[in-house]
Length: 309
Length: 299
Image 1 (tube, rainbow over the protein chains, first blue to last red):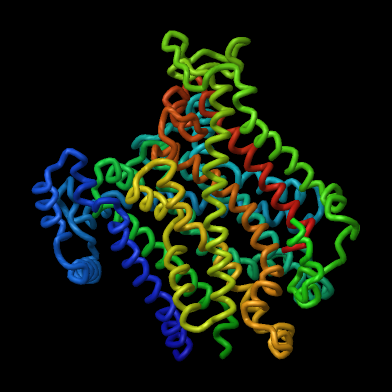
Image 2 (tube, each protein chain N blue to C red):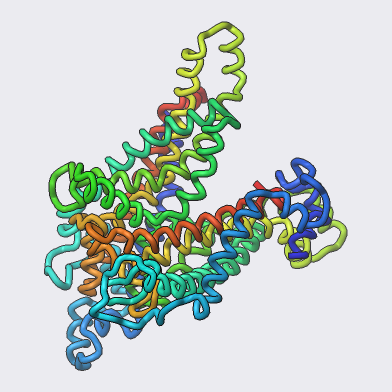
């Protein structure tokens, strides 16, 4: 019980400053706009009166402290950063309507990444310095250099245009999410394989592996123990990379014309719908923090060593 | 270059973490160690082809990259147009060369400023510690909490699309990588015996930081920089693909890929070739970065 309390305290100390920072960052995003957001929304032709009216509507005529207060209380009380300038509904409603597509892609991509990364990392670690290992270690250089959206286009050319196996986007249920998720999984894999390979080598080098092998346990049973010990680092690795995955998903939605958060964000950018862009950015950051905390919690729970103290 | 090579003589050469692991293969002069590192040689050669293509674009190009020929659009590769033409009849080979100019220039600028800021902030916060360090760490945590493309796109949106906008956005976000890593290594050095000894010997904090700690951390920062360049080039291309970066008619790989996407069903090479140029550049710089790491023996 005290362990849980300590975990809670440690997490709160880490999470509270970050969430505060994220909220402040999205608030001050509007201050970066040259000439102010209202003028930017209305364009060069707008009269001063029109700009002043929109500023009043957006609350930009208030003192900075009052604006910050209403922004923060909106986030805390309603989980909302304001009203869309285009749709005239709370940004949280718009986000809720689009988040499903994005989360489905992220989930599929995470699954795909797992299916690619774990066997490849095992193959590389078990045949250290062999042919497979060398190939797997060279590939990351190529993987890092490939823009995710371009991988998506290649997948469209091969699997949608030439083979006709899967749609090149649109709203054909799960089938239209396979290629985008694959693009993200492929772009994530090279770097993750490299990290996981290093961690597996560390586990394979541990005393217990030598002890089990010496005790005459078959290779396969030894590997089962290695796998269990490698599970936690893998989980941690995924938690650390969730931010990158979400960012990649927003971009890939554009390639496949999918109607998720990314589409909402880019659409709001063309419409100069500031509150929605703030809302999407805040939502993504909070989601990343939540996943980080969740993986941290899981690792803490699953690791038998944490039960010792 | 020589300043970095001199790491070997710094006080950290003995105390450094990992840098002193094994004796460098062939202790000879720097260029000889470079020539013996395959990753370095391959990376340098590939990178050189891209840099030369960019520098010599006016000489190597067969056409004006902006010249339109609306009757000769979407041609397949031929003797006249080596890589074909785009939807406006512009020569793709020539645009590819000029795009290398645009993208390398933007990425170069977008990588240098965050490097300087990140190294400065990271080393000082790691050395000084205290409240300053706490604030820096919280700012870093905040920036890292945002998915990279979310925060970059949001900042570009706020400050305005275009070359300048993406440079500002990439700078605002990019320094964090360097600050985080350098803060950690500097903190390790700062609490080490040799720094205490240098203090005891009467050296000022500024002198210890600049003359003794920085040479030990800079190598690592430069390896990070080489990895970061690849990331930044991909980011510049991605932002331009999204319509937030380089604006038409300036040639750039991202807008070329985006222009070609509409015709991907029949003219796949329109999108695939500029992407391949990005990958080629990235592989070159990645290998070069790994090679530099090997040459200077940094993890």
